[in-house]
Length: 232
Length: 96
Image (cartoon, rainbow over all chains, first blue to last red; front, top):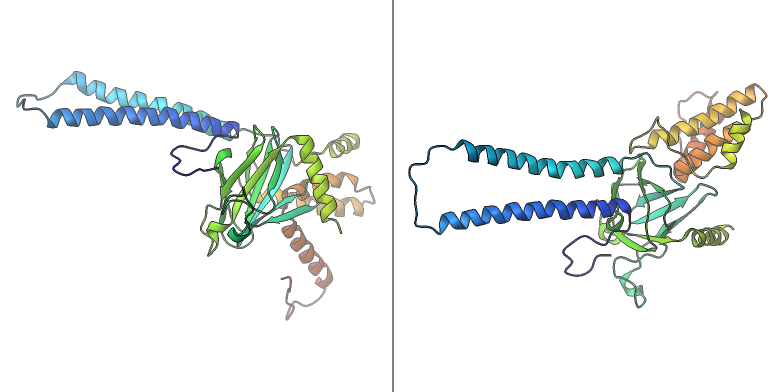
């Protein structure tokens, strides 16, 4: 989850997010290098008493400062496209979960075997127990198994919402009447937080998303328990 | 052929990748399987055959479609079935 005075991304919990992190590191390094070079050149130009009134042209430097940016752009584009196509790979999910956005809570449905679903409301600040996070924790988390490809189908019941979990590298709009698909694999067990990412009314800031990833065996126990509790 | 379908239904985990709907928008995938299930049922019942193969479509649309949508379509289906022979003036659909 995010922590105070955080500068970088949250730790990656899925392979795609790891790739995005590394790509960001690579691109940011290029950006820092270019900015440092330009800043140095500006400082050097500004702080010298030497002048040269007779330069007209120079073929060599023109070639360098045309080819070098082109090369840098290719160095950025190739990893970028690699990740783009990686995210678009055909996947064979083991589980489908539906996330429905409402004003102002999410509901999750697991209907592969039985029709079972539940609502996920934010825990109000006055009801927090010690150790819970303000504006982030919910009463019922979306539970999924680790190391299994999961497909999430996102839609909304009323207005636009957006389902986002930064540690998994996912953000997908919840549009009423439309079913948006995204897929991910959670590499390690843990609890991952996100928040609604599309303005949706008064309590837009108060409908967080919590994904809990547990090993498959525990997931099976959890779903059995949830089914028993929900059946009349 | 029916053995293969039965095996597929028995080993069903979740809706597999469908090349007809490769993109992010899966609305049509859900709706198409819902329609296919009902058409399959209708066609096989008309021929007095076992509608067991239609179970595949039912599993897929149950996996993909939100429960609320399925409920709504079921009610619309029932409404159309009940009132198909009635003049439509003045009939209101109260489903909310």
